[in-house]
Length: 139
Length: 235
Image 1 (cartoon, rainbow over the protein chains, first blue to last red):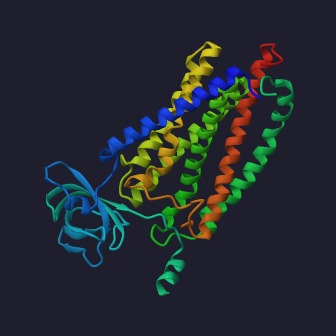
Image 2: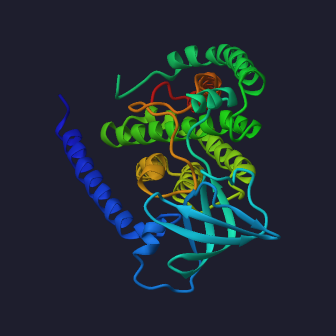
Image 3: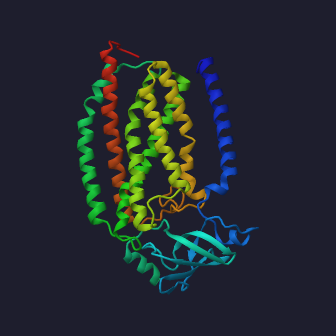
């Protein structure tokens, strides 16, 4: 069907592509720690040492855990296996709410306590009108 | 057919097509904008800021799609040495580049009211930036290199290398924890966008695809005219 040269080029391409995919996979695998944007409370529990580097933690804001005292906000971030207390002073994004996703940037005090300097809201992939949401909740 | 093509015959079709595509684009875009800005409901959580999605998501899709086409054509150029493919790739790139920039900019505008930040170095956003960079390097190398054989080779290599990044952009939200939410529209699993919001999204995607087609045709015609002016009736 194809000439010898064309066949040779196709073979070469296959080998090159396979090699590139393998190397990219290995690179990404080894960079995994840097690629993740935040770590979960469970991963914090499993940390061997706590250093003073700035990190990001993420998870859900536990229901009925937000306590606002003057300019300080305390809440609990959970991944439904483990949880961690977060304290923060400053303004929070509009979508920050109980039962919603959150990413907090700051410093670990210990395995159960996190001092946030920045709060980001993480929203999920569900989009629907308010009526539909209400109907779903009523069910 | 793969080895050579007649610029004159192709030009007969492609020179007439743009005005029809433009007409269709204006109609589809108008319907899409009315649907997206007026008729579609607000989101239960994000309220009206969800409307940025109708520009952001189609732009990202189109820019990824166009890069995939360019990469595939570049592979074919490498195998079949077909010069028409390189003209098509070259003509596709500008609109893909523009849409990758639109996706990044609208993403930042959307991120501020929802996440609380313009920019985050998470896997999805960073890989999307890399896609835009690949587009710009691709477009630049078409301008920088003079030698015809050389420029086709270099641009193809850039497009093929850049394709590594495409699945990373697509699956970054599934592979790693990112600030960016997971994908809502999936072929295999259930779509998590309500139908009233999915329809404007689909129409806007069609409109943007037509716009890309329009820009592609205009650019492609220019390339064909360049060949004709050089007095070559075939490549």
